[in-house]
Image (cartoon, rainbow, N blue to C red; front, top):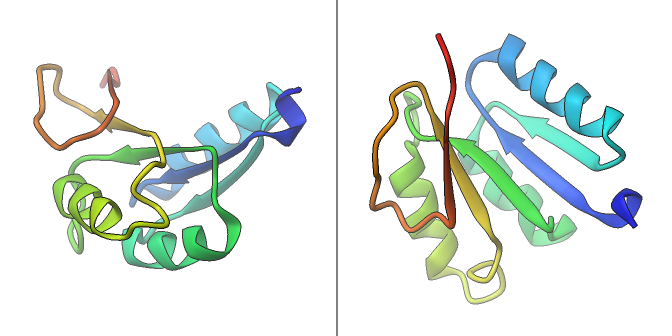
Length: 103
């Protein structure tokens, strides 16, 4: 059942973050959003989301650093991550998926 699935969205663009979280909630997911990947990592330790959707480029901690920190934590390393960015192309961040957004 969708309402049991928790998705964490990480994006430093507040408007886009709000849009994604609201869209996921409308689809029946328990969705939460955070602008900080560092705070997101701490939140994940307590709440254990089923999926993380994260932007690649952000000023404080980019998506590559986030994936490395996630994989370094044995309790969180199994969490699936979808990388999202403005540019299309392949990335080697370790995420399980990639979604380019239109400008």
